[in-house]
Image (cartoon, rainbow, N blue to C red; front, side, top):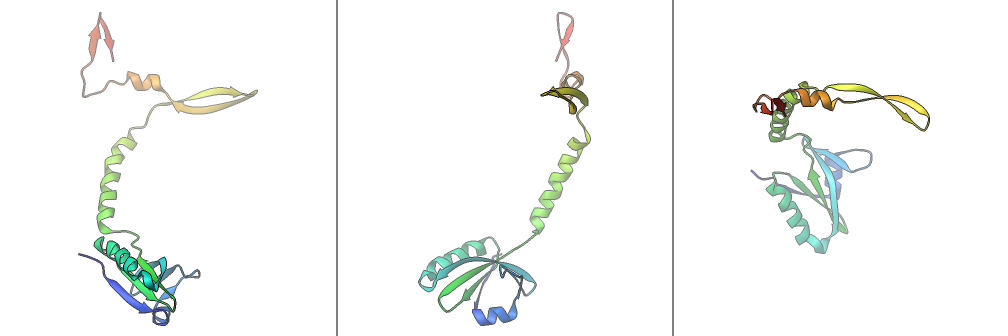
Length: 145
């Protein structure tokens, strides 16, 4: 599936679209477009090439013809269904890791005569936790991990 290119004259576009206060975003036919490049009329090949690149990624574009220039407006998709599913998969993968919190300890530090406390990771406690996927090894009667 590919996007499509729509052509408007400046007057028609301003009548049909709902613009934000800076005229950098426009809502047209329930789609949100953001203002892109503005090029001269003799750069029409570059304008069409740019629009075709966006269309290959299923992004709609508008070409607005003014008196002296052409402006490209690019569809802004805030959330695409494919990306949201991928984001949900990543969040479910991270949730078990986030549930296993690292052991911490409070350390008193001094800097330029001031004493303050800082919470840091207790690496000694982390090293004592045996990993379940690997067997513990002994060397001369002592466990080495």
